[in-house]
Structure formats: structure tokens, C-alpha cells
Length: 447
Ligand code: NDP
Image 1 (tube, rainbow, N blue to C red):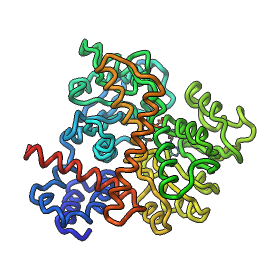
Image 2: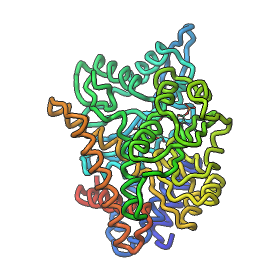
Image 3: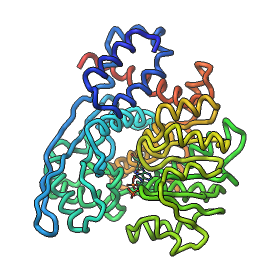
Image 4: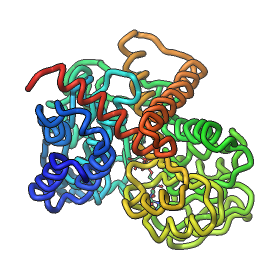
């Protein structure tokens, strides 16, 4: 970093949180982008905007004690990181996965604040979750855990305060249990959680929103920056959860061919296109492993080691599983196979050296902060519908999602162009969001 204030701040964060590698990585992404604008904005240093914006407003930690089906008592750690309420209530998902730590949630909450500022809706940023592992748990155990988790978290939520949604390990089933118990504890029916099933006040298109939004973003970027589209493209998608499945659905609808998908144990490869109904049956209905795919479609081959998915020759790569899954080794394979574009459905799935390699080879890179913003955008529309006491049609919401993703692309592309970096969408997103948040901070005084 050229700017001494930024450099000093980065080193101070490193000293303060030496073990929070994911959080530091997310901070580094932001600082390296905004380095270029610091000299024109002395007020950012004068009002210490960097430290104030990157440090979360509040980190809540609690113990979650629950009983399994055999009456064994378990203890997990629960957290909510309320990162920023500068432009609206804290908003962001809950993640249940053994890899959850304070560092992971702090990076996710920071990215969420930047992402939410792109949506044009009044939402701040937050993230939460637990190191609870939902894999292999009975339905009853999942419900018991969700209730124990909410018994602690509900004190900190509310439609005007903090509105969680789902993330890894938290889908509609878990949101239902969490929301049901929240209502029981508060005796209030409000939009204090999103990602609900439509039967209990959720919005149409919310389940599909992140994946659909990603495909809309990719198609728009290809048209505007590469003079082509998703039509006929061979696409690799990691993961087979919520984001991956609905990204695949929209990619196929827009004429692309999804030739590989994965879970954390392995991946499937189909020469032509995956059978998405089979994937949905395996993952959504039966909650099985992707290994069983060849039982449904004998044209698909299963292989262990999900990282090898990136070795397949394709046009577009959509990492939709988890952070740092796409490292420099994987990117090297993509580069060797002349990949045209990498777009992040997951949050921070590409490592820093992976991104550097993509840039070095001038491969179009769409950062998750922008490319996966469709989920929270429709969460915002879910809040709006519940507050209005009305429901909107699938087509209306889908159209708003499509226009919203196009709007996000235009905003960050325009910002990148302003600095003669038209092909650098990561620069565009960080500078666009930072300027908006810094302005909101300056207007509200030192609080
Ligand atoms: P899900 O829990 O629905 O799915 C996660 C998927 O990723 C599962 O298939 C999981 O497999 C797989 N996975 C995890 N680790 C690996 C790995 N190392 N290699 C291959 N596959 C792996 O989560 P979501 O789809 O909701 O979230 C995925 C990503 O998208 C996360 O980064 C999340 O933060 C981000 N995101 C989600 C949004 C949403 O609306 N849900 C919104 C914006 C971003 P397995 O079952 O084996 O663990």
C-alpha cells in the first residue's frame, strides 16, 4: 500500500488480531483497492474512517447447550457479528459449520456491509452462526439446536435492529425453526428473519435469488465486457447447496451447460450438462452425498477430491462452496485451460494469490461482494413485502432481481472506468462501496 495511513492501519489490525486470517484477508482486499483514492480524500484519514469502518460495531458471543436424541448434552459456540448499521439494520446470514470461528464471521460481516451497500436498499451488515455441524443430525436434533441457538440470539434481533437469514448449513428448514422460536420468545410476528418459506411469510424467489443473481451478473458482464453471453458456455460450479443449485438452474436456462458440480467429498463430471433434477433430489430431498449422482444419471462420473473439479476444461468457473476453495494451484489449471471468466457465488472463495494470477492473465473476475448480492437483495424485498402486508408475484421479484444485478454491475463497472481500470471489477466494487459507506459515516458524526 502506498498510502501511509492505510499501511499503518493494516499493520495495527494485524497486530490486534494476529490469528484472524480470514478477517485480515478481507481487510487487505479493501485497503489495496482504496489505496488509489486516498490522496484525493484527506477527510478519510482526518476522521479515521478506515479503523471505524473495518472494526465491527459489536461482536456477540454465547454458549449453545443442547440435548441430542440420546440425551447426550453438547456445547457449541454461537456468535453474531453486528458489523455496521450505517445505512440500515444489521443484515446477513447465519452459518452452521464446524469451521465457523470469530475470524470467519468477522470477514463475512465486513463483506456483507460492503455488499449490502450495493443493493440500493437500506441495509447494514452482519453475520453470525455456530461451529455446530448439521451433517448426520436428525431433524429433531436440528430443531433442538436451532431453538437453543435462538434462546440466546433473540435478545439482539428485531426488524429495525438486526435481521439474519441463512448461509452454509442454514436453509429454509433451519430458518423456519429459528424464526418459529423467535416468535415464541418475543410474541411478535415481524420480518426479523429472511429466507423463510413462503408458507410462513417468506418471499418468492428468495431461495433462488443468490444463484439466479449470480447468473444474471455473469451474463451481463459477458455481454458488456466480452461481447458474448452465457449461451453455449461450458460452466464449472463448485458446491451443490443453495447457491450452486440455483446458479446452475439459471445458467442452464440462459443457454449454458453446467458440466461439473461438487460437495466437500468429491465432484461429478458430465460431458454435456448435469441433470439438475437429479442434483435437487439428492441434495434437497434426500440430503445425500453427490457421490450417489451416477445412480440417477449414468452419463455423470463421480470422482473423489472436489479440488480436481477445477482441472476440467471449461469457459466459466463459478466457485459457490466456501472461502479460499479456489487457490493459485486451481487457478493455474483454469488459466492453462483458457478460462474466460471466474465469478464468485461464495464469499471470498478465491485466495489472494489466486486473484493475482487471474489478473496477471487478464481473466475477467467478478468478486462475490457484487456477484452474489442477489440473495440479500431479495431478502430486502422480503422485508418490504412483510412490512407492506402484501406479497408480490414471482415475475415481479425476479424482474427486480435481474434489474438489481444489472444495476450493481453498472455501478461498479462505472466506478472502475472512472479510474481507468475498466476491467477491474474488484477495484470497482471496493471503491464504490467504500465511498458510499464513508460518506454515510461522515454524515453521522463521531458516534
Ligand atoms: P449450503 O450449505 O447450501 O451449500 C454449501 C455447499 O458447498 C455444499 O454443497 C457443501 O458440501 C459445499 N462445500 C463446502 N465446502 C466445500 C469444499 N471444500 N469443496 C467443495 N464443496 C464444498 O450453502 P450456500 O449455498 O448457502 O452457501 C455457499 C456459499 O455462498 C457460502 O460461501 C455462502 O457464504 C455464500 N452465499 C450464500 C448466500 C445464500 O443466500 N445462501 C448469499 C450469498 C453468499 P457439503 O454438503 O459436503 O458440506
